[in-house]
Each structure stands twice: as C-alpha cells, then as structure tokens.
Image 1 (spheres, rainbow, N blue to C red):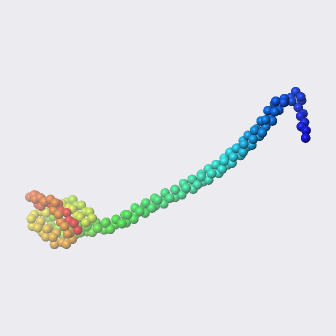
Image 2: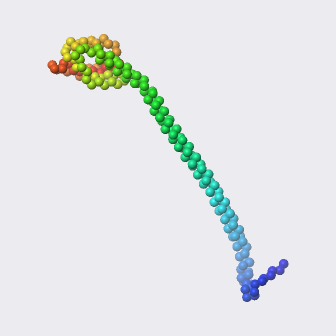
Amino acid sequence: MRQINLLPAEFKPGRKISEAVKKFEKPFIFFLVIYLISLGGSLAFSKYSKNKFDELSSQKRSLSEELKSLTEIESATVYIRDRVEKYRSIPQRDTEMKTLEDFDHLYSILPEGSSVGAVNITDNTTVFDVALPNTPVFIEFLDILTSSEIYKDALLTSLSFTQERGYQFNLALTR
C-alpha cells in the first residue's frame, strides 16, 4: 500500500528528519508502553494501598473497641480481686475481735480502783497501761491474770509506783 501525504510540499519533512523519526519511533513506542505499564501499576498499587489502609483502619477501630471493653473487664477484675483479698482478711478480723472480747472480759474483772490507759490491740496481742491504787489490788490483779487461761504470755514492760496514783505499768498480753 502506498502512503499518501496530504501536506503541502513546503511542509514535507526532509529525508534526514524522516530517518530520525523512523529511528526513534520504535524506542518511543517502547517507552510509551513502559510508561503505560508503569501508570497502570501505579494505579493498581494506589488502589491496593487504599484498600489495605481501609482494612487496617477498620481493624484499628475494632481493636480499639475491644481494648476499651477489656479495660472495663480489667477494672472489674481488679475490683473483684480487691474484694476477694478483703474477704480473705476477715478471719484476721475475727482474731482481732476475739482478742478485743478477751480484753473486754479482763477489763470487766479488774479490781475496783483500777484504771486503764492507752490500749493497742493487734492480731493476738493486747498492749495497755494499767494503774492500780495499792499493793493488795496489784496482787489481786496478778492473781486474776495468772488464773485466767485466756493469755499464754504476759510481758510487763514498765513498772512504777507513786503515792498519788499507786502502781502504774505497761502490760503486753499474748493469746
């Protein structure tokens, strides 16, 4: 088939230009194909990246909601654990209550004229200050204390005597 050139003769390319165009035609088409493939790849990668971003955003929202619910569960678990620990400490409170009841019994049988100062009650120990007016009352108190089988140890940490107050001492009793 013959080529028809409708351009006027003055616009007709010269032989060198025609050869140059023919020489660069194949590389130009090659680079055009490469460009189109790259453009298609870039568009495909952009679409893939957008889909992946949307998927990761959705996953992040889902994990954030799950984390929020787990935080509430953790708070409830910590609260329950605290309650369990307090419940387990109740037997210790029972021991302290028994120690208090024992001291109350001892206080009720103190000889007349006695007075009790500071009292400190912990687990199985009661520490208190006692003032007894005279020697017979002091001896009576010691007899009551030794005959009572409530306490297994009694430690007298201080003892003093004055005419106005009588015997004053600090006593630590252990059940």
